[in-house]
Image 1: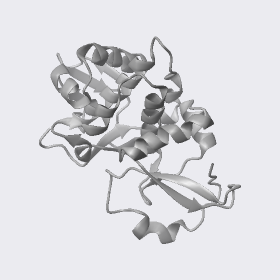
Image 2: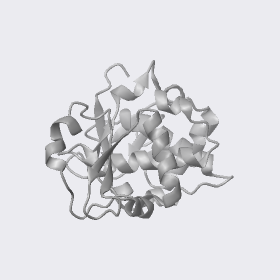
Image 3: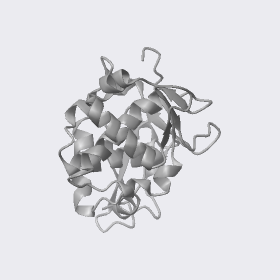
Length: 230
């Protein structure tokens, strides 16, 4: 992945359609869903920007995700059932990222800065044994999909998070904290008329447009109408 770009395109409709709510933690499939969201990242990173076809081997998926071949297989099956990928569309080790259109309906997905020695650093911290890991990955994909390019923040309330991901309100902070502790998001606190606490959370993906942050866009974020907090 020597030529990996700072960011790649990710179709965002599936997030808006609530497909993250399909990923419910359970003893039999919770780990598969964590593996699915982990495997989807390097597939996106290897995707052709015109065709939406990704060519990536199991060896590269193993290196990028730190997952076993068995868990990668389980994750790919889950992605296929969700309608996010089709397999072997152009031969072995090829994946079609479904509903990809380079002209619209995509979000910037972080790429180059996620990696260290060919591995996505954050994924080395995930062990597929905790619900909080699934919650964190679901939040990550949601924040990426809902990111406002103008202010470089995802402005989404707890109620919206629950509706779009299925994560219970009392688990959101734990999932977000896991992301923040590993440098995957920065949580910004903004004034809000509509929050009982007078502040609203917004979420920045630090690996995307890192020079575009609260320090230089904050003057335009003095107050949000219709944007709640906790």
